Image 1 (cartoon, rainbow, N blue to C red):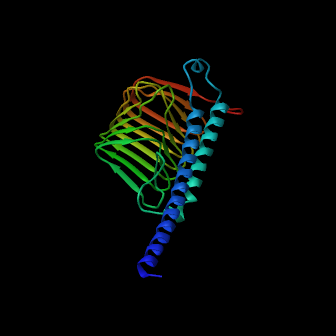
Image 2: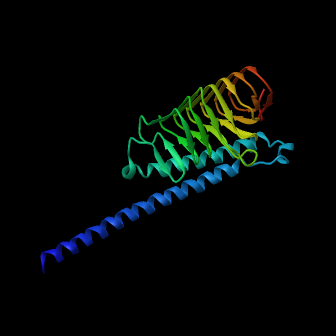
Image 3: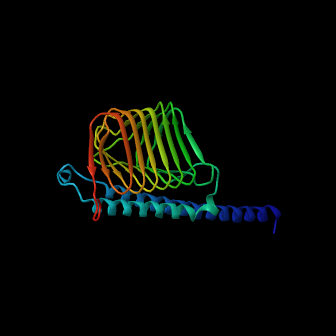
Length: 261
């Protein structure tokens, strides 16, 4: 066999092998992305409500069960990410489909300091850090903080467009913490969701928030508010801590479970 012919066949074999390897890895990433999108859709459906349903508030137990289902889905997402550690371990922030994941590896962080668009949900987990500094960010999805994650916004605009009431949620779990200083939170003129559970902490300091919100508080979580234009309603349950100073429009729902005094 002539040498050029042999080299051509070897090149063709190598090209075929590389193509099949990349193709299989691409399919794997697409499967994960599809699974994440499906899980996120289930998350959103848990909190989709219309104005008619607001006339009758669900019981404390019903809200707690809905939140628990949501946390289960988030943990499912985290487990799916853990399966990929050996394949995609990287110090860089990761994307799966339209889902941004921060904290996939220890010490992972992302700083946004300009105009920025995120096309889907954001999950900050582990010891991940998401920081907005003098930024104008548009986020087309929910925002989740797990484990010891931190989200900090300073002198920034965070815009979460919505097509209907309660389409978006900001959910803090574990020992996560979110701080918003001297910033604006805009949810497109529609009512939106917040929820804190476990030992999570949410802090607002001099925040402009033109839209009404429903905030569920569970576990031993804390919310500290000082100077906010529109606080919203708070469902107060379990052993939480809520401190509000210099705020407008505060509606409190005190939940007393069986056996409470």
